[in-house]
Image (cartoon, rainbow, N blue to C red; front, side, top):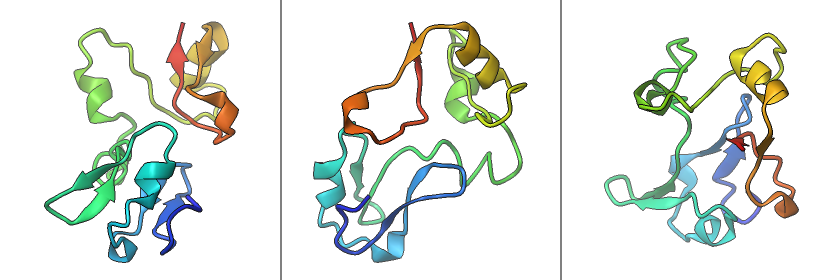
Length: 115
C-alpha cells in the first residue's frame, strides 16, 4: 500500500485493500509491489483495480456472501467475520488445515486456502 506515490491504496474497516480511484494516476507502482499479482488495469475507468470481495455491492447491501462464493460449483469458498468465533469461516479455519500465500511478505492476508 505504501508503494502508491499518491496514497490511493488503503485498507478499509473490514481489512480489504481498496483504491481511492480519484487518486490513481496509473503509475502502476501498486501492480509492481503487489506480491500476489492481484492488481490489473481497468481500462474503462483508467485505474488499477483488484477484487474487493463485493464490498461495493453485496456487502454494502448487508449481504454476507460474495458472488464467487455463491457461484462456486464445489462450494469451497467461505466468507465471513474472522472476529466472530461462531461464523462459518471461523469454524472452518478452526477445524481444517489452511494456509495463506506468501507469508514471508508479512502482509497479514485474510484470504486462506484449505489443505
